[in-house]
Length: 401
Ligand SMILES: Cc1cc2nc3c(=O)[nH]c(=O)nc-3n(C[C@H](O)[C@H](O)[C@H](O)COP(=O)(O)OP(=O)(O)OC[C@H]3O[C@@H](n4cnc5c(N)ncnc54)[C@H](O)[C@@H]3O)c2cc1C
Image (cartoon, rainbow, N blue to C red; front, side, top):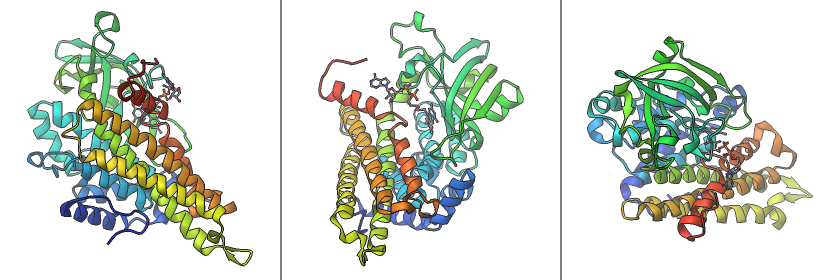
């Protein structure tokens, strides 16, 4: 059945079945569940466990390693549904790393690591939820990272600091981006970066990792941390891919991930439109439903139009990840992320406005949607950086930075 607000996009029969089963699972976690997580800041363990039991954390892990071996379209469906179900961007972010960190492992980890780790990740027994790239002096300019890993015998010794590393508290491993060759010794700053798989229990046991949570105002139940590494020893076998090529390894799959983030924004936007419209149908002021006023209808209708347009762009690109060049896909993925984040912010704002004073009451949830929608304009890439890509790579304008 076509959902009245979420509409329908072109999907295969299997993909429609997949969407229905995700929707069914998500429906077991109601608004009160998410409201409670938001109020207490508790990670939604029950929800993530349920997804793991369904086998969906391994959506992108090939079947030979125990995963579902699905494509970008399925991960787009998964994340849109999680967000639209009431979980919002926060719920999608609670599992985002678990789904996406498997991609560089599948593409670049050695065979022994893949055979050992991936089936456990797919089954939800081992978690690789966290990814550490951003540093206090390197956010948008990711190649400016200063955390170093120096080879000593059959180990790397890691020193430095990360910031905003999310889900470290619910991860067994952290996928860490480090500089293995100083910038001065490489011909381009994109070279000399490497990926290390860090066993977090081992790191804590060594006394070489200190972490502090960052208090924040959106997605409180997905915790982000500041990390300090002090002579952390990581076995050289935990290098993922080729030393010095880590940045290029990350580029593989980056556009697909951006489409998945766009889908999370689309889901949040659909959720906000639905809740805004539902309230506008019920609430009576001056003897009639407030939704009878065009001033209330139009912002919701415009937001709906923009969310659905962003959705079409997102799914159209997700269906074509195999036949577009990386640059073409990058243009579409950055466009989708930009449009979807703007649209979900517009939708959440319209939903808050339609709720009047209750727009800021936690009981109605829309204030949470607005906080999360604001965050989507900042992560994992800011709107400006998404536009920089479109300007430079699609419109052939001079690089502006
Ligand atoms: C809740 C949360 C969770 C996060 N989780 C993770 C995580 O798990 N792992 C991780 O590695 N990182 C994570 N991040 C970090 C996130 O990816 C960065 O915050 C983001 O990339 C922006 O970097 P920055 O904060 O350093 O902003 P800056 O790079 O300092 O930018 C500040 C502002 O300047 C603008 N700006 C900078 N340069 C330009 C330019 N050339 N043109 C136009 N505008 C420009 C930016 O768009 C932005 O608005 C998280 C962040 C948050 C808030």
